[in-house]
Length: 328
Ligand SMILES: [Zn+2]
Image (cartoon, rainbow, N blue to C red; front, side, top):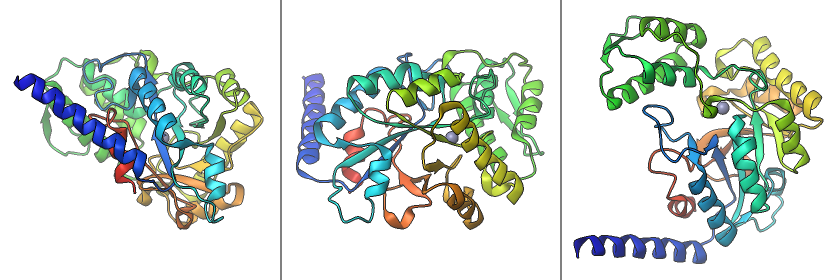
């Protein structure tokens, strides 16, 4: 009885959310994904944060959007801002970084639903075996047999016995490394890997980046392909010259290899403190708008730091209804 009651409650809640979606209009929204995985569940620490969404949940998102919202190309949405056009219920889909599963798993699903999306590439990783330092850190912590981690920079010791410990340590390390302007993240991860006795490089399809053939196929399939820097640094931490090179070299690489590049730029990490007025002015030279990772709906006043909603992550993936409703 108790079990039946719970099922009924969940069903009623879902029904109410869907009724809400039918009745209540949303402002224009840009959704941010990173990956769509063939794996149904995380493997240890790997993808425990839900960065790569299981493909059946992603398909359920597309079904929901097809039924209750209007998915438009990112540029259609950006160009519509400030025109006075009725953009209620418009949704654009974006993918950051350029993971291989964007091309092999997400794009075919999007095509099944005849939906557009924009893919922003970290061009220095495309077609290489390199992986993001954050992914390597996840891999190292997942594999290590050690039970304690000495934080870099003399930040004390952390227990890394249980999965929860490791998850906390990973979050702590990421915050520590991102917050230090003088460290080179890859070098700090080398030090951590050494300390934890893990020498191998990450393996596994969800850590892999797409290659340029796949990027070209996305463009040929009608998807938008754009620039997300060369090496994914926090741009506000760089010298103006280095920031310029990261932005323009990634744009040039996309143009050269794909034959087109989105007029929207996508800031790595993307919090408002990660791109300043100088970075925005640089982008202004070559782009028409830029995407942040700040949470909210798309608005003209944020053209150089457009807000987005992230429907991926622990516990978030199955509740796009709620995310869309709260964005009003
Ligand atoms: Zn990114």
